Length: 262
Image 1: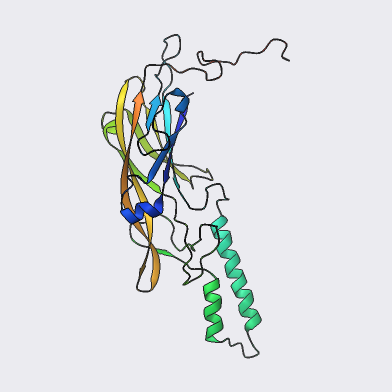
Image 2: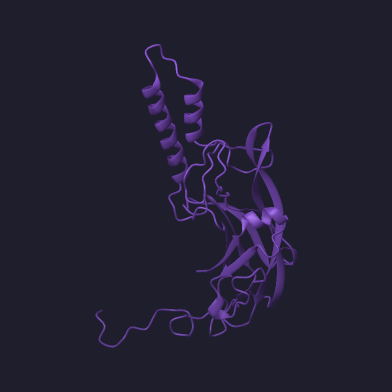
């Protein structure tokens, strides 16, 4: 069974959009620190990938690398997947209830009351060309509450989206990246993954193309505008074979302590 490696791509979206660069605004982590990965929590991560053979020298299966992008300072990915839609639905239901309570015998409501209710129902944000997803969603602040229409509360940015992975590691056929569909509740249905040619030791660079979303106002309407940026990382394939992290020896069954029940 392939060993599953993971790289967390944590982006300070607000600062990245302000400076229009991911340099010094990206923090990378992987799950191979105990195997020698370097630069954890920085923008210069070197992910260690162990060789593709067992302790006895026989050929092992390939390894798999997964990339997971997250936004720093936004709603955490651990909330339920439908959280934003539920908050929007609750606000709409509250607005309808208030409208029904305000209606007089003739069914008319003052313009001031309509404006007030519209603001508390939350700001709906559209999208511009080139934006993936997000169409028609309501804006949330960093605490997960709806931003009032016309309000100035700090808003939560959508999670970064990896749109492509290129560079030396791809050109040299060290990794074979692709985007896959998944029912996973954290990745919102899509994630990037790659198999690694671990029989070729060396250090290889690769580039992630990442799409962020900036909130812009045009013609009185708010919308998410895509901003495409790039950041680099490295893989270092070493000749150390796969080993069991519990025993330090080759992969296999864990030893059974003496006297343990069968």
